[in-house]
Image (cartoon, rainbow, N blue to C red; front, side):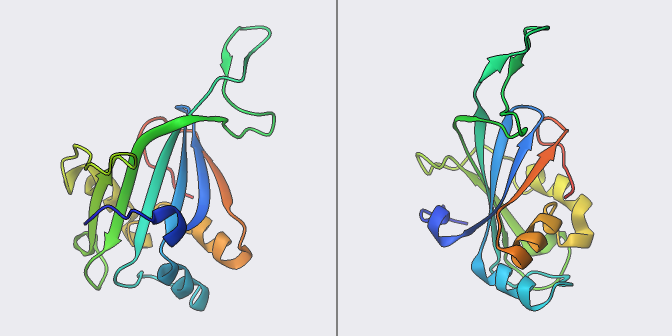
Length: 168
């Protein structure tokens, strides 16, 4: 899979997910997948060619807790304040019709240099995404469905650190 140079404009941003580890992620999907979901809210399999992308950002400190002195990275409403790109773009593309773990291809790139990330593929991604077989390997299907029906970019907060999966 090649780096999608125009992903911020060619794909549709459907959600922002902040995580307990201070990282924030923009979630994108290709328009054909969004239209398929709008036609069938009970879609069980995304169309061939569907592309999901996750762009990762780190949070910046906005203050300190008055009592504990602990750094604060979120605004009053709870959303993280972004500092900079983590230079990580995760991709998942439907490359074969059908359902199951062999129908998707995974990749990762530095969105600044467009260089591939050093990942053990498909293992690094597939091992985790196999846990989402019932939603065609996607963890954010409920966020995508809400976006499809409202047109409003959805927000989610994941209490897990790192790359631990959060289901929305």
